[in-house]
Image (cartoon, rainbow, N blue to C red):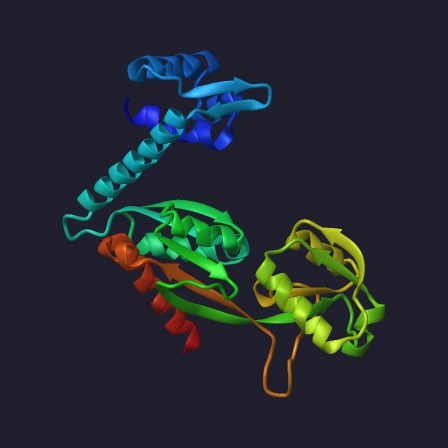
Length: 290
């Protein structure tokens, strides 16, 4: 049993499907089936059972998957530490980043970071902030950039605050919002809850949802074309967007805000590339404050 076998077992365990596993690993189905059969011979035990809807792992198969996950982690951990045994900042930096931050902020940020640290390789995964938090808990990422306020017991740094705004193609009055068509978009539970709570505290009737879309970019395009207003975080509003943008006020002194956090674990600070990225983000934050 070797590293290729570890990845076969863990991927098949995720997919529960021979065809999808073979596609993900870029091997043929017969080759994948043959390797599973060889593993079953090696351990003299059944590892999987085929079903109409996919495969199920036996008790022994589940045990081998746990072993494979541990070995993959140990090998990756060893490689990372060996790459940090000199003073050069190098190695792979595994990032989990909120999709919205990745869309609007991350490309230029990574470009500047890699200009300063060219020997660092980036392994990036994006998703909802709740998914990023899970990546950190499973140690699939060294560092996470999440949006919204989540419970995190280890290190976190507030990277920035941004206003949540009403955006429209023409000027509108907040008092008229309940009677105006609103374009809604799929977002993470934290932002949805923030907006919903504000609405319920401000108005006595539900919003008039005229359109529901899966992406915030689609929502913004519909608003730009005069098809309704939207409630958007400031991050996705560009200077050249022809929109009327009004930050939402909670009272005379406070705005409705959305926080972006850096989450990381104690153990990852042993890695030079992680320390370098955190230092880089802190410097970026200080420049923005100034």
